[in-house]
Length: 146
Length: 423
Image (cartoon, rainbow over the protein chains, first blue to last red):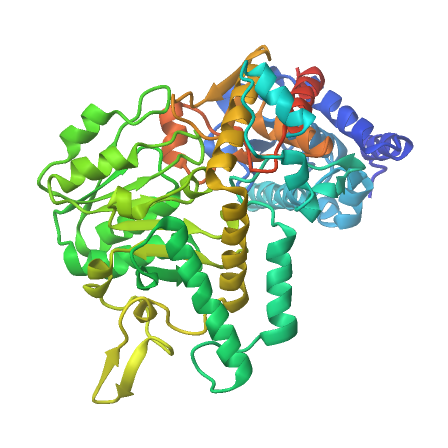
């Protein structure tokens, strides 16, 4: 497993903040930094929607050389902050490395300030990454065998 | 009258004080002293489900501690006592809505079940393919989907009466839609999203003039004003206990006795039969015909206690207090730049659906929650209405009898904080 530098950076920052309201502000700030152009309107299609979220979430894998690089967006800013942390934390991994990520990784993103529903949403996002990773790997394997 | 009440009155430019002490009333609700994230709870989600006064909690506790047993069955002391309390609650409900007889009161588990009961029992007997059920654009899903099921099952049609931008039913359009093919009007008494109080008396008169029966979904309206089904002359009036400061798991279907008698059972089982044999079974008269199986005994008795409670406060006093608070809240929300309230009907209950420009409703609700303020967010089980309003969802603050101006001030301050954080 690679070092997961961005993941560590977020986890450490959230550890240092000892106030739930401040954690929210931190997540909102991250959300604000994810701009419209980071996930162009043209990509906000039904097939890129992650279902089951109360607000709209779009996720897309842009795999390269066997590694997965995610981009994502949401119309709600707090969710966008969470999406941003997740895509930055877990991009650059292979499908197997994504599979090795567990609930502990998500919890390390210090979710004390979040409701159960959002925690479930974060786990669903991780599972979605794994699914997208496998889809990319299958496409790659098929290309190699042909 | 406390300072808070006086403040409401003075700000409204009205010096007449009515007998409703909201600060005293608040003490009746134990949950209101709870802290949320170390902040005092501000509960503005009574439209989804209201909090319970101590008398309701105590009444249910009393059932289980002292006289719980199944009703309408045993010959023993406890069963007799629980049956008496259960049937006494039926009398309280009948008196509360001014039904002609307790026999016109059927206990269901909630509004949804009551509407489904009417659809599946009355609807399947009296409606046929091509008949229409007229609803409004602002119905809760509970008064849409049961009729859509009948569309699929027997080929009826659901017809929709439109509203204007203020959220008021367009009465001219409604009248035009009352054609010969309409065999039932099923309409809300008060919109759970917009707060619009619908003129159900006028609607009933219009429909009855054409011999069309009327069903009123009173879930929201029964909470905010006194209801007189006799004066209304509606054929069905439906509400749920948990929005009326009573327990969950109990709802009420009022039906005119002749109408109920004409309807076949909805569900079969114990307690609704006269005799059962493999050669044929006969059913009890209403209301028991529609109450198959063991009912929600403690909950029905709890609903009776809730009705005693609001009766003691006086529905007119509750309505006057809520109208004061409605005016105060409307004024306060107007002062927030970029805040849009959906629903500005002339006749309205204390329900505020809103959006803040440049923010997502889920974000606003989350920031409000962090400040101890409970509101609802989303589509409020009214997707067609959201489509009509051209939005994906709203934040909704809904008032109960225990809310005061301090709650409104806290809401306003929290919305301003949300704006600072999110924009």
